[in-house]
Image (cartoon, rainbow over the protein chains, first blue to last red):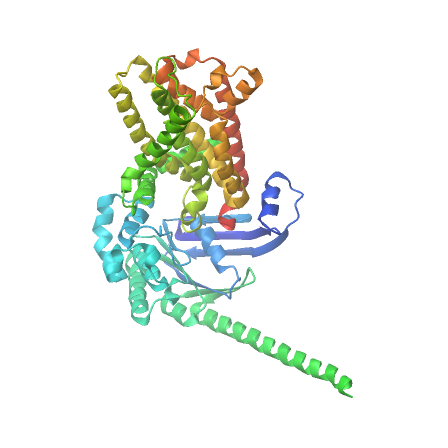
Length: 270
Length: 268
């Protein structure tokens, strides 16, 4: 089959972090392989393919490995084992800030970001009004990004990333900070990008409701493993069920512990 | 060899971006200060004045050297120091300081020290123009020896950019390393031939050690141009020493890059 129908192919990817006791140990480890470390497997043998034009949501609790996967697809982090093949220009909004230089104003960051992606100044000038309009942060556009609230950063980051003609759009959590009106705007824009330009969209979130607005397919992850891959509604139900089960289990455990403690204390009272 | 080619390829691919990033690094350094761009010149001017005052007026050691007033001898050697000092420190801090390029987008991190170096080098060029103007004002017109100024500039740029890659990678892993570098800068200055002429030291082994210091090689090189009026091939063993240090630095940088490239996004 033609490989080019895929935007992203992930084959048996494992990502392992080496955790050292402190930075001194880590520094020593550069020169000697005998320094002890603990292995933390963030991604455990995960494989999936995403076709061009697909909209996929990644669900998972903190530490499930969603962000690590996105980072590897973006090309920021590297897998320990396995292969990742990406076809197309990736535009990624990782952890809100999207690689802003905090000392520069929003407008300067538009140019900087555009230049880093290889756009010419006149090309950026053309899309600048669109970005300014979309971000809708008013006079803050000409203030240093360090003065921005997290909501403003997310708006600007999102505005830049969707307007530089991405082929693969990756968004990590960013939409959770915007207000309702902005979310609606984002939804419309993403639907437009997906419908008109065939953009592949990959989205990480805790909120199943937001994901259903955006995506057709859902992947559920837990402790670095992929548990479910399929229709967004089923994935959302699966994820909500999983979280609920975990909460119930915790409650039960707590209750059991309480009971156990009470039982243990009783003989003492006598 | 493969790694070197990779790094070079990244530089070619990102050449446009590198100059833009160098420009924005310059903007960031000097904007927001009341004197703005003047700082690029004021800081070195104050340092040079202090040294001139201490040696000429204070210690009364500032006699003329080779027929040149001590002041001219001093600025010929100190001119490149400000670039070197900036690169030793900020080069080591370059990748850490530009974390957003490492952890938030796909960007070839080996090029980060390079654009920092370009930015510092632009300031260096301005400073050198002023120094040349001072020499002309003092009645020493540019001559044929100025032709080798680009050669020494290239040597300096090459060495300290490679240093920036090596030290920048290590500093990401350990902040201690960065602090070590910062505290060694002063030592490197006083153990180089900037304030005194390292070539005239009579104890041979000390002289040899000083000549292995690349800071000495560059300062001597700039003095070859402005004061001593000799060609670099007449400088003898100094060239060999510098070449050795340059190659060692290059090997270290490549080793650090290969070892740490994939870890750095995880630890920053």
